[in-house]
Image (cartoon, rainbow, N blue to C red; front, side, top):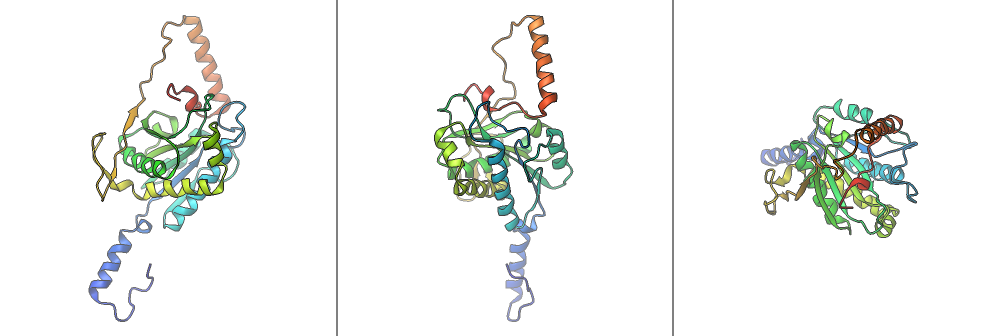
Length: 270
C-alpha cells in the first residue's frame, strides 16, 4: 500500500482512487477482532481419555489467526495467549469491552463415536449470522472435511456477547483422520487463513435469514443452518427427586469448571 500520497506525477484521479482503496481496505475498517482460544489451563477440552489436547490446538490456531489478521491491518485482542484458564464470564467481558468489534471463538469437536467428522459453526444473534456464514463458507471450502452446517445455539459466549459472535468447530480431534490433520502446522495455518478470510468477507454474505439464496460472483452464500436453541430432552418423565439431583449436579459442575459443556458429546447428530 502506498505511504506517500503526494508522489510526483500522480494525477488527481489516481490520488482519489488510491484514497478510496485505502479507506475501504480491512486496515481502514477500524474493526477489533477478539479471538477466543477455547479451554486452557486445567480445562483440557474434549472428552475423558482424549489423546489430543484441544486446548493446545485451539491456542495454536488462534495465534496463527491473530498473525494473519494483524498482517491485514486488524486490531486483534486475545482472551488468552498462553496455557491459562479464563472463565467464560471473563471472555465475554473482554469481548463486550470493545466497540465495533467481532468475537471469534476457536474450538475443535470431540465425541465417543470415532467416525463423527466435519466442520460446524455456531452463532446465536441474528447480527452474527453473516459472520458465521462467511467463516463457515471459507473453512469448509479449505478443509478436507464434511460440512455439518451453521447451527444456532445459545452457548454462553455467544448468548452473552453484545457484538457479532461466532464459535467455529474446526473438526473432530477424536476422528483419526481429522485428528491427524489438526496435528500438522500446515493444516492449522490453513484453518487460520480460512477463518481470517471469513472475517474479511463477512459483509459479502448474500441474502437475509434464509437458506434459499444462491451465490453470485460478488457474494458469499448464506449457509444452511439448523436452529438448535430449543433442543428438548427425550426424558421428560423423570421423578422430582431425580430432577433435583440432576440440577444440583449440574450446578456443582458449572461452579467447579466454569466451562461450557462439551458440545459434541450432547449432540444427537455427532
